[in-house]
Amino acid sequence: MAAPMELSCWGGDWGLPSLHPESLTVMAYAKFSGAPLTVNTINKSWRAPKGDVPVLIAADIVISQPAKILNFLRKQKYNADYELSAKQGADTLAYIALLEEKLLPALLHTFWVEAENYCSVTKPWFASRIPFPLSLYLPGKMSREALNRILLTRGGPPPYSLTEVEAQIYRDAKECLNLLSKRLGTSQFLFGDRPTTLDAFVFGFLAPIYKVCFPRVQLQEHLKQLPNLCRFCDDILTCYFRLTVSGHSPAGQDTADANLQKLTQLVNKESNLIEKMDDNLRKSPQHPPRKLTMLKLAAGGEESSPLNRLSP
Amino acid sequence: TAAEPWPENAVLYQQLKEEQILLSDNASSLAVQAFLQMCSLPIRVVCRANAEYMSPSGKLPFIHVGNQVVSELGPIVQFVKAKGHSLSDGLDEVQKAEMKAYMELVNNMLLTAELYLQWCDDVTVEEITHPRYGSPYPWPLNRILSYQKQWEVRRKMKAIGWAGKTLEQVLEDVDQCCQALSQRLGTQPYFFNKQPTELDALVFGHLFTILTTQLTTDELSEKVKNYSNLTAFCRRIEQQYFEGHDKDSSATVAARSAKRSLLR
Image 1 (cartoon, each protein chain N blue to C red):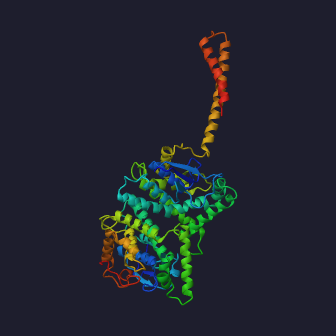
Image 2: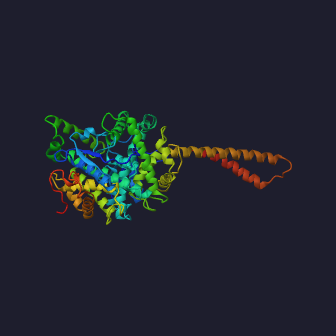
């Protein structure tokens, strides 16, 4: 518990702390259990990721898969599941298996195999966060691994039909989403009103489907027809990640600054307009000069120029 | 064709019981047989050396019903449902979701562990798998076929991240899975209390096979034996659905030895 813990994982966009389901799962669990993690997102200047991401580094220990990382956190007394009964613990394992078998293939397909999605969104996003020249090779490798995994676990013996396999995995994924929606019902989290390991896994898998804007979005459209699952993701994002639920702007902080700038300029324009209007009013004979108003105006006039200088 | 009733001459194909069939395929075959028994649908088991190649998906077992061929438990359950027989109709939506989740748990952990043990544990591969898998064929075909299959399975293990696991870790996973199943079953006779469902059939198929198959070590069956409600569950289903039926049933003959009684 004393040693500081660092998590290195893929970064986020579209309002998510991370695009990568496994990284997102670990980050969510850390928030739920109150584990103090420093998150280092992989960017160009950092050392190249070797294989498994996310990776937790605590003192000298390096742990790499989500299940193992969560186990480690639990041993360090960051346990989000201590209120669960034995049966609920069993249910957790079962539902995680369901996610991996039925939802993950379609998720991998949407991100890494669907040609339009991969070329226009996934590859450029990941390549921009991997140092050259690895950026030329690593996204392609991840894509091949995803296709491999889908075919080996779901494809039949050759000759298989890729379109049939694709149709089947999306059918399974939609059914899985329906099952999750029924299981969640109207509760806030899957086991009542406290988030647990299972919530972290479900969030990790659902949030990328929900938020990332792809050209081909059949899975996202299906998910949006299940409002309780969307509400589940949004709740976790706002409560645990302090991210506003905005749809489509990447690099949220920059747009916030730009918005602030625009707002300031608008305020300035308005105050100039008001000044002019009041000048006209003062010049007209019907209105005797009102000293108070003039003072306010003068103050307003002085204020607007510092405001001009304040814009970042 | 979905409207046709279940014929009397439905057949289930699997590999040769005594010499060829492996742990994982035996488990899957037994699961399907248990499911059909629970639905009271008659089925005849036929053993063929080339069953794997006869199957439309390459996976076993498969059933031949009327003029249709369906393989693997999932599609068979749906096929049977289309004919009007179902074990899970009485469940509500949340229970159905749970049932499907637990079935995936068995596939994800137990079946994968069986495959790992058969094809990635060198001792088991040498002593049991290679001799059995290629037994119907002359040399060198028997060696070639079993190496080919081994390569395929290892590729799959690598893709899902199991290639780096040690045998101890795999046995740990089996233990975790059995613990989850045991906790879910509790003191009930079946997973959804009074009536068996396809989940019971699947769990029975795997656990019974693990308990009654003699491998190079007893470690796998010991993991299951740690949970007494699971062994009682297997005994109950064996007694109710398999004893007194024809001697061809896989449940009455173990894969390697005649060690079939659970009452040790």
